[in-house]
Length: 310
Ligand code: SF4
Image (cartoon, rainbow, N blue to C red; front, side):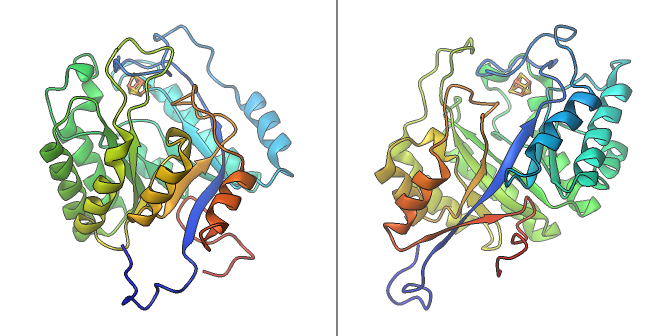
């Protein structure tokens, strides 16, 4: 947090976001996270076709969208359909690039070869660490939420030099100490490889489709956690918060004052939290300019948009 003695204190603060649209290759997922509002059972979903994806992308070309977030449920690594699913992810990335967009894929843990191939057709990739706790009841039927597997994915992305997004899902049964340990583990990997561009601090926000009846994360705790995360993480790793999950304007501003600097993808529909709509960009801009701050678009890998100075 800046104080009047910091050289940047009197400069306008810059808060970034991404002009994004989400493509979902498939909602099917072999995991069963109990807070999920996204998944359907394997075989219960028609996968997105390239023809349909092209139709959607062409309709977005004049609407200011820059990032295509390719967000998929997971096909089991040993499923005979894994190869077709990976092919679809690659084709969607290439199609997005061909049509002038900047793709970012988040599709669960990937083999080294899959990640290397996806690197070539994305500007960045993502995978939430979620939590370091190995025994969370909400993950009892979600083998790919194994925290060690996820840490290994962050390291693999570092070895491949992929700009990467990760983060914590807050309030799913973890302790405060476990949150801190998760942040420290991410910080250690970042210090070694330098590829983790941002971490998302995502409060558990119950939705209408989930089976778990756990309470929402206490949002009042978020500014304190952000300040703590800012102390733990290297300065180049930005902290992102999802503004649609923080509906109170004063609390959202407190989160930004505490050290969050990015609002993530502002999308027409948050596919992970479909019950929580976003404020409009005009509303966000008005809120931030009331503090003398600037809301500025960025690309998925944090390069500024053409026409905006860094
Ligand atoms: S949260 Fe993600 S990994 Fe878990 S069941 Fe839902 S889609 Fe699958």
